[in-house]
Image (tube, rainbow over all chains, first blue to last red; front, side, top):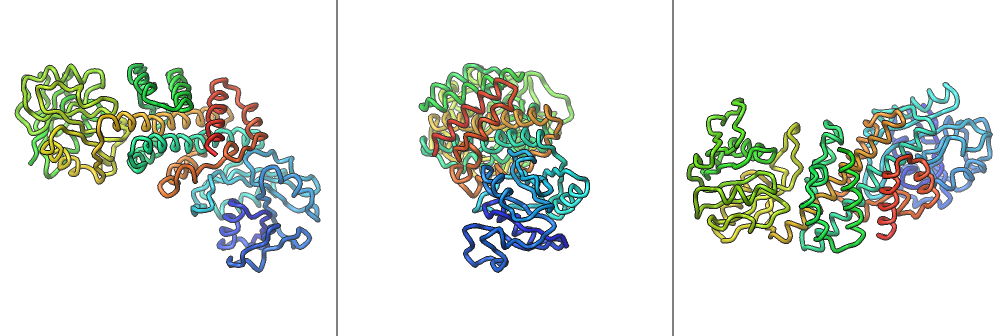
Length: 249
Length: 249
């Protein structure tokens, strides 16, 4: 059994705690959360509110907000243990050097209200020794089908690309939804198209999958679309992304 | 049996012909394609290359490129029959008035290399009489679970919103793929995130589903991302979409 404690109890921490609690090869030792707990969880007896209460474990996973990671790691009252963070945008060396450092980055979008199937979440790991790397790999493989060794520089780039394919993509869904609402159509009408668009790139490259007026160079349709949009911001997005698609040809 | 002929044999025409050929309540009478055929299709004996060869049918579906729809409909050598187009961006009245006009718009992204499950494609229909609307509805329901009455003005708006949630979304996948390639990471690593991002909005509204540095107002992360992007165009997209997300709050 690999003994794991979770530090921070936001979306990622909560999902990880649930997964390790259920795991056959992992033992959830404690969850450290400054705000305590509601008492409704199976492991509510192991939720602690002070870092002094943290017991020995094989691995401490810090999953607090990005800006708090450095401070939280500095305030841990022990040394020479394996401490990792889960932040896509942070390098390994933001962690305090008294402990052995690592990164355990599940590349997924977590929402409180939606369960995540962890087996489908790729986990990107980094460590400073092969022993620690090995342990992180073992833990990651208890959760995930896909585990990737990704260094801090690659992870920054990965985090940016995740913003494009997830945060920005979701915002385009929002724009589509706004346009439907403005014209008294249900957003549901777009959902099969959204699903198919995502599904296509499982088998086609994004380049092969590209369709629409911009890639065809169909200026008439693009002008008609622009004249139909009443929102200046939507017009700007339409123009910039269309011109970016055209230059891709 | 409803007798249907398809005019134009691009992606949409081909998918519709396949579906009507397989349908129990539909009969594929003919397919009109100027360039003829390869002879490998089950209905290759019914492919004609001249509009004069078109036999009587209950419904003619024009699925040629948007700019050719008007001319093709003008050149049909008959009148008072039901002729529809499949173009999201065209009004019903681009069709020649000698025939009864209608629209049969399957809202989906069609690629030659990927089969489409038509039952999941919403079909948007419009007609000028209730009898014709009824016939289109019957035909649409033989293919699709969801059929929506959508007038020409709504359809234009719908087509624009489809550009946002499909063409532009796919382009953001392309940007993500380019960034991965530049940093020697496989695009596969992003695919679960892409799938989850699309899946989320089946149950959450795009507003509820929005995550990332822009919605959190996390300027540090955004600046770090911008400094990491080497491509001016990618920077512009990052800035515009981030600011659009911020204003959504």
